[in-house]
Image (tube, rainbow, N blue to C red; front, side, top):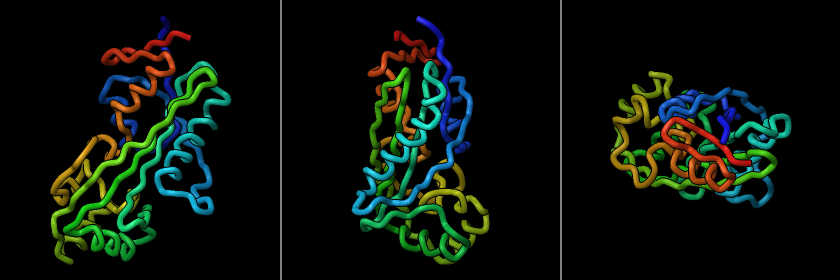
Length: 199
């Protein structure tokens, strides 16, 4: 058994925080990929593909490292809400999510020594009803501006979420238990901070 290098193919500070939370030392190597939808592509398949593409780009040059890619999308009424373009777009998204439930889908892909495993964790999130004043005040914090669906559950946004049905960490951006299970399928063992692999 040997200790393994871990590379996160993402620039998300939330994903870095989550790996650190569970004691996994890692390097960060964000990948810039085309995130456009393919014709007829379902949202679930879309985020899974992006997570796999991010991991694959790093893994091709890092055969012995465990590479993690991830992608998160917010879906309501079958529509995907990405990151807001501007304040008005953020207000529009939050108004749409106010007082109702939506789905958060986070894909995680793990590659090690030429083998890949991926999965999508889907979580239901319900917002409290929000007044226009509350929505504008939240947007003024700037927290919504770099997040899918225009909110972050781990920050000020924690006060507008009424209920989470599923993996809270998936809503943050990285489903940790699912990630560890995928690693195990590749022969990578996580033991509460220690990560070892059997080729």
